[in-house]
Image (cartoon, rainbow over the protein chains, first blue to last red):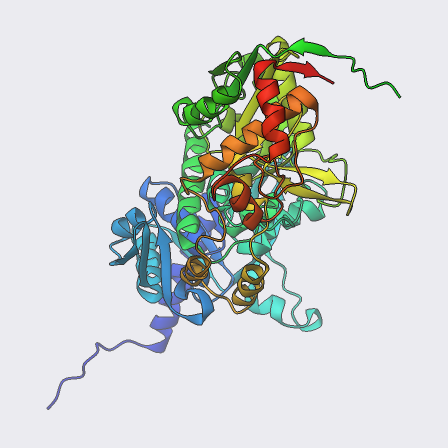
Length: 263
Length: 277
């Protein structure tokens, strides 16, 4: 007689396993050190670096999948490019790459993206995917102290049939890594707490350094990284330069860590 | 009509202030270039202006610099309240903890800030030329919008190093092709290839010829200090105010020279460098 491949388990056990672990996770998410809104390259990088330093980090991602636009390069082609010195981060992540020309490196998007996700998860980053950012939690002097989130499908359906209230998660720092949308910054703008200049109308070709240099606190309690930096400060738009996304995430993590250490 | 001028003083010296991300040594060839025109004038490279700030003035200066950002190209006056992060960035940049670049400033507002920092060091007898890695604009009454500039002549004069790359327009076809590629989602690699297909038709970042351009721009700044009339209409003259990269290369890089009129004027000013406005 042939033995079954898998051990026996009941449906109810599977259900209980999912619920009990998720409830335990959510209990931890309710109050954490850093909440990163957006699981693209800059958000994952920031979360990974913080988790490696034993900071409790939660990434809130509205999609089922993590990685944002990091899976694919320009023109729907999945070769991505990074400029020096960002290849050093690829080394840290264990991503193989080739030099295209001096200072410019290429690697397959799926390889780089999956390695970054794995590295973040292995570092201890918690993930809440299929959950969308809804609002900010504010404390004294309008300091950002957390995020209000809801399941993504709730926002995708008409309000009449999905009257589901969101939940609030508290944190010491929130990182807006939501790309061009800069959703957290926009929420502060809606409340009249911040005024963004919009995109620079000047046609400027080089702004990667400015994106990295401006990665940091844009409001008490709120750090901005990645393309959200461009939106927040009106820096010129640029093509998909992933090196600056990774370095921006790293800079955001450094700023957050120093802030947490100083508290 | 009287042609007499109110100010007549001898230009004693020209002070160069190196840009934020470069060393003073890199500007010595610009200094040597100008010395040939004005042998009796003393040229010196000073420490960068914005980095020598007393601690008590750091916060105020950071805020003023952040307020000088050009945020609305169609508005002559920039009257925005700076953001928390913008002030913080300027503070870090002043202290040398952040690299300067990629941000656009209103050139006239920046000039006011610099003049205040230079204080007594700036005078009629001393021309101050501040090189910067910031991008600068001035507002044009012709089309009612701000334009990026290579040089903003004044007291002091500002020469924007990234402005050499970004301010004069590249060939028209370049922008059309770039716009099309961006709409199609082209990546960095393809944009690099586009750039290489226009090689030699514009000055790019890290191009060693930038310093050749800076020499001509510095000459324009000194001419402004002496005469308030720094530019020439002749496309082949180093004093030509180029709005296209093609003209910039033609006037500053491809066999640069002065037109006959300005060659004579500069020979005369070289013998007798009098500021006459």
